[in-house]
Amino acid sequence: MAEVGAQELLTAAEAGNISAVERLLKSGAKVDVRDNRRRTPLMIAVQRGDVAMARVLVEAGADINAQDNIKDSPFLLAGARGEVAILKLLIPKGPDYSRVNRYGGSALIPAAERGHVEAVRLLVETGSPVNHVNRLGWTALLEAVILGDGGKAHQEILQILLAGGADANIPDGEGVSALTHARQRGFKQMEEILLAAGAR
Image 1 (cartoon, one colour):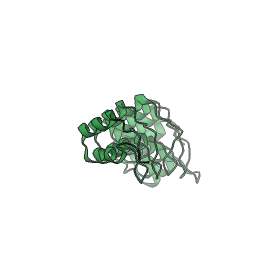
Image 2 (image 1 turned 30 degrees about the vertical axis):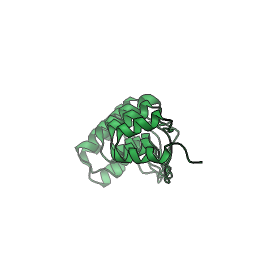
Image 3 (image 1 turned 90 degrees about the vertical axis):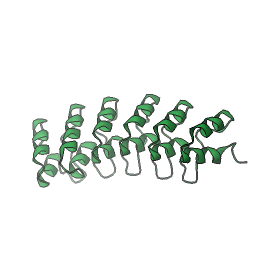
Image 4 (image 1 turned 90 degrees about the horizontal axis):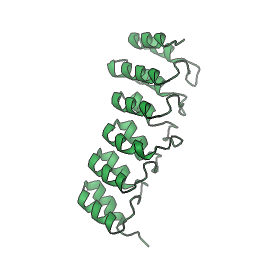
C-alpha cells in the first residue's frame, strides 16, 4: 500500500510549494518518504537550494543524514554545495560524521575542494572532522591544494583548516605531501601558508 501523500509530498518539495508540504505533513504524510532515487523531500530541498522548504522539513523532524542511492545525504550535499544557510539549519540536528559520500568523503572535503569558504568555516567551527581521509587518500586540506586553483578562496580555506587542527603533513595515498603538491602546481602562497604551519 502506498504511503499517505508520499508522491504528493515529493512533488510539492520539488515544486517549492511550502503550503502544500505543510498541509500534507499535517494530514499524515511521512516527512522522510523517498522517491525512486531514494531522495527524501529534504534532499530535494537541498538540491534546489530552497532554504525556506528545508526549514519547514527540518522543523517537521526530517532526517538530515538520510542517504540516497548515490550516498548523498542532505548534510553531505549541503556541505558540498556550500549551502551555508541550509547547513545552519541542519547542524543543530546532529550530523552523523560516520556517514560518507560515494567517494568516502565528508561534507567538509568537497566544500574545501570547491572553494566554499564560509561553508568550510562553519563546518570546521561546528566539529566536522578536519583530518578525515576519503577513498582517494585525500583530506580536505589535500583536496584544497590538489583540486583548488591556488587562489584567494583556497588560500583562506587552507588557513581555516589549519587553524581548526588540520594536519598539514598527512600525505595522499601515494605518500605525496600537501606541500609537495603546492610546489608542483606553483601555488606560492599556499606553499608559504603550509610552511608556516610546519608542513614538510
